[in-house]
Length: 398
Image (cartoon, rainbow, N blue to C red; front, side, top):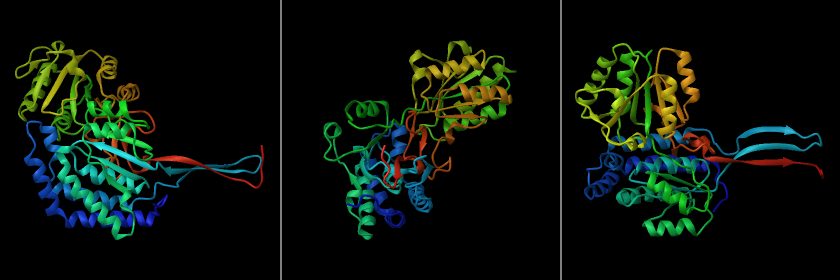
């Protein structure tokens, strides 16, 4: 296998893959229907992630074409200087080498994450969940057809059809050098990978995202943003879970009741903290642990706060480090909030649903990292690289 594929070859494979996915729509949908038939749809978030329809396939095709059109992230000069002894020293981006992606339920990860890893010059090991096996095997077969069409080894994209025990053994003792592992899924999956992996792991962590409604908020904006962030896509890690409302907001009780009514109209279960007060249609929160929970469901928890400082402290204690928003017309207050909240993405007067590689202009994402090393937030094409030093001399010795 070549150490680094040329950008021309990588792009040709991506464009061929886009064509194959488009042409193979019927086969993909048939395989996904087989996966769906064996799935208990009581888990709404998992059901939404597992299901593939024509819109999702169009998204896969669009993602591959966009990736093919983006600049090569490998070999980009980060900086360069000339040493006093004449050495020319460069730092340039470089591929990791072999990237393993472990994910649950989402067949589109086989395309989007696989495409980003491949475009950035990495060999890809895909370990999907058993619930999406039929869909994933069809998509990986298309990857192999695209590679073969351009006389490139199938080893560049491999699918690991392992059970839990086999996955554990592979993490402990892989049959090849793995440079990076990215788990995409729940906290149990992430903990499992971190426990057994023998190479660096980038954590695509939980959401548990917050919105703080300031006493200087535009209430109509607040209602629209909260409703969108909660109900637009409950299975997404950027969906809203918690709301904190400043008690000093004018018309506090009317605002809270209006918010609850809006949410209940979309069948959202509304939990409230005892400090908020009693409101019709809401249920009291039963356990403080629910403040830590990522719901991934039509469920939301609303609490009260006395100040932005209190809200910041609360979010930093309970939040998942993913996304948080402030609704306020006070720019100074908003900027203080954005600086002080410890999250990968912070928002002023906007929905948390925008924490997404495609929405941020990255052409998609491999994952959304809640780690601080080496990349935080959406990991796009530009971030799935490390760096390398190039030093050019003329006989210099130290």
